[in-house]
Image (cartoon, rainbow, N blue to C red):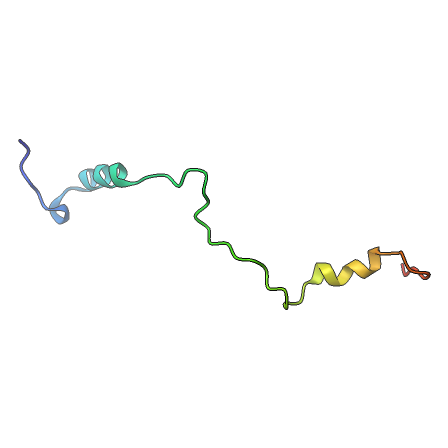
Length: 61
């Protein structure tokens, strides 16, 4: 039976071993928080699209 040693008193190597054993992977899920884009916010790409759209009678270059 191993002698109990408090976590604070363990060596760096032993703490590292314990931490690695406790860690798990996120798998296929990304840990980055995601949220939808604000529909009211100004979007530069969307604002430039009128130049690319030549469906009207006059095309600007």
